[in-house]
Length: 296
Image (tube, rainbow, N blue to C red; front, side):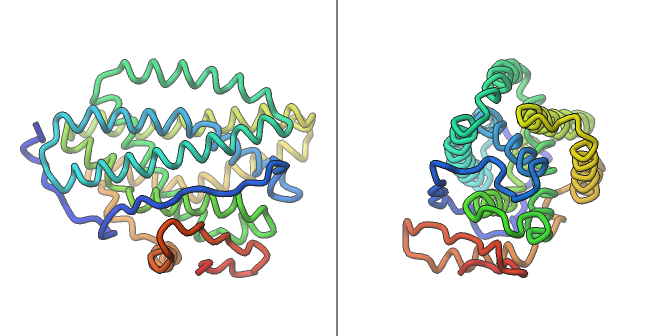
């Protein structure tokens, strides 16, 4: 049963839209898809590697939560969340297979670890699972702002398919940014467990992503070069500067992701997408454009 103190609040978006989340990645895709920047390329590749394990876990925790939730609006959001996440992990799995086929079969070792890690997490209490999910989803909002607002600095000149793939993923993360939090508040709402979940979810996922990056850089035989170590430090600092404030605010007692306004570029993208014919392919970003405008 829904917690008696829980009260559903409107979202920033009218509805969570389930789109045709597919990208026609070339078979010969270069895993170093940001020219001259293997560190950033492999960092995002490392995050992609997690998604076919993380996102099914998020879906399963939401399915468990549904058994205790009665609010019709929240139940509708939970369904939209799960359908978006299902599309995400399927596309990430396709992309990850290309990474392994195109030079990095060693990444399978991390995949085996994640299979076991998320199987263990699914045995934890529902409160712990939802706190992990809400904790991680609180920082995806930071990634949404980072990737959209700094898209030119991050992806200028990069592969159009992969850049568009990541930006669209983050847009949909922004659309459902309230759902994991609402599920936790409706089923528990205890502050301390949510506080721990921010660290648990965020640090676990980011740690796995950096592990994947290091595996690939080691395969490239550049991991221990001074230039590479400097670039890794630079990426970590950028991530902390851009995402850290969102993580800090998520730790506060009065946190609610509704307080984080969506980027205007994201709102324009959503409006533009709504004009597309049904099942139309997602237009790719022009990564050579100095402004990288909305592709509609």
